[in-house]
Amino acid sequence: MQTIPGGVTAPIGFAAAGVFCGIKKRGKDLALIVSNRPAAVAGTLTVNRMRAPCVEWAQKILRKGRVRAIVANSGNANCCTGRRGVRDNRAMAEETAKLMGIPATEVLVASTGVIGQPLPMEQVRNGIRSARAQLKRTGSHSAAEAILTTDLRPKEFAVCWKTAGRVVTVGGIAKGSGMIAPHMATMLAFLTTDLTVEPALLREALKQAVPHTFNAITVDGEMSTNDMVLLMANGGAGLPPLKKNSPVYRDFLRVVREICETLAKEIVRDGEGVTRLFTVKVTGAASSTEAMRAARQIANSLLVKTMVAGRDPNWGRVAAAAGACGIPFKPERLMIRLGLLTVFKGGEPASVSRAAMLEQVDQPEIVMGVDLGRGKAEAKILSGDLTEEYVKINAKYTS
Image 1 (cartoon, rainbow, N blue to C red):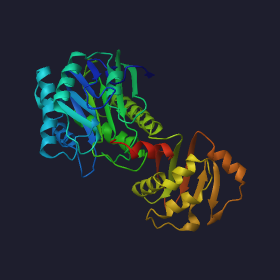
Image 2 (tube, rainbow, N blue to C red):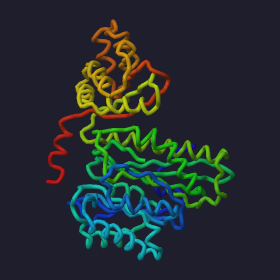
Image 3 (tube, rainbow, N blue to C red):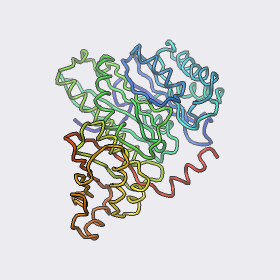
Image 4 (cartoon, one colour):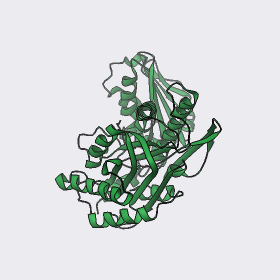
């Protein structure tokens, strides 16, 4: 298997474009991704009760399992916009469909940005027409730029390998920087492949990948109204449909997870104001749900995040966050590690020097280990530190 450039258009039969249409003050703000033939599709969507019309639309389209295009805008979430928002979302699908000569039900829509403001539909329609005219087989990077909000850089990744005498590819793009605590299934991720994969097997691939990648990251503990991961398969490589237990499908599962993992990590690395990453690994839980609950509590703790930002080995904050997660563990069984160094065990501090602890928290990426002493289940979550820059960005987000 080989990492290649090309992102979402690396697979055969996909084209994309990104343009500026005037939703944002500057920079590209509308993306179009198109398959040259009908593609099977699956997706995972935010479980936030305040869901944008694009999420409701996607839920209906995903039941059909076949699409040709994704149209996405940035700078405006088109959420909490009432009936107008629903109409505008449908108009985006219909405009794209008209230009391509396909039904609107074969177009998925994604929006990201400020909540509670109507879309400037004249500009959006012009943007869709412009994007349709600029579609390219090399347009992934442009599309990746067009879905950014507070992100500092686009996120792309693609992998190819050879099977049955054919080169097959999976690629993807993503956006996300703030309002990141996905629970799906503001972040978006679009993946494509030229393998022939039925919707049910695409759903299985996301079911295996998303919980350990996009759902195992956090920047600020805030769940978006618009989170969406979409996976399209158009069969452009010319191979027969994959079978569930085949070696090729197992390779496909592995690659989908690798791409999701890479894009998810890039989202945290590009988090608003983030300067350093840390992973919370919880072991010794009674269930995987319990382990993730504890990991998420620690990873979202503002005090733990600022501890990481300041390179301060204040492990007491980790202990306090673990104790606040609502899991009835026994304090004397709790064990905490900073890197490979055990700093708390048996209900008391371990005999380690401050200099040794400082060395552990001075790494570019930190691993915090927490064992609850209750069972064998485990979970991990990737997070970023909290700096003054996060406050600056979000204090003036709509200004």
